[in-house]
Image 1: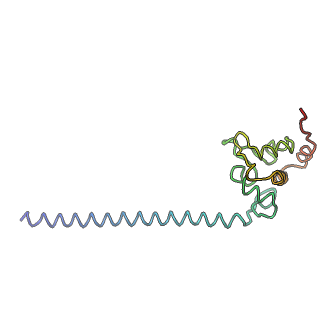
Image 2 (image 1 turned 120 degrees about the vertical axis):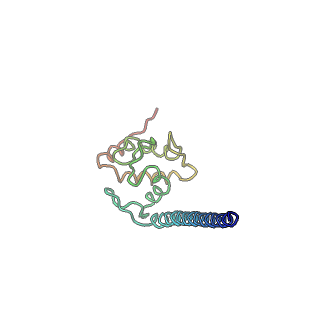
Image 3 (image 1 turned 60 degrees about the horizontal axis):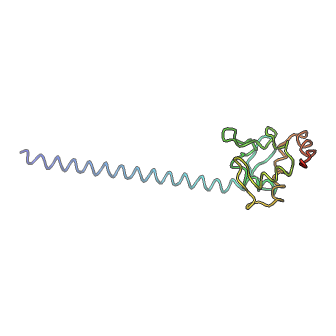
Length: 160
């Protein structure tokens, strides 16, 4: 009698294990598919939003790509300095907008910093030209107050 029950119990355990394995596999496939679709969606949204229009508060439209300096900013600076040039204090990335100190530098200092890099700033000389650096500076100036722009324009480079 036990000999008859044991194979039936083993068969039931085997079927239950197969069912659970299939269920786990299906769940893993669903999770992988959902994750893949999510990654694909983020990628596609990123591709469309790069050329699209995202409104920032002050300073107008960001990521619209109409201004050559804006396009350069979006390509090389946006990732670290943010949409409105707010920077990231925790990562030691300075603000470029009116809250930062970029406006206290001379144009030459900023151009050199863009091209040669700095403490947390990567060197961009192989990626952007000096004229591109000028376009970037002119774009960032849009976030500064009129007083800051006037002070920046009157900054005289050190001759030492």
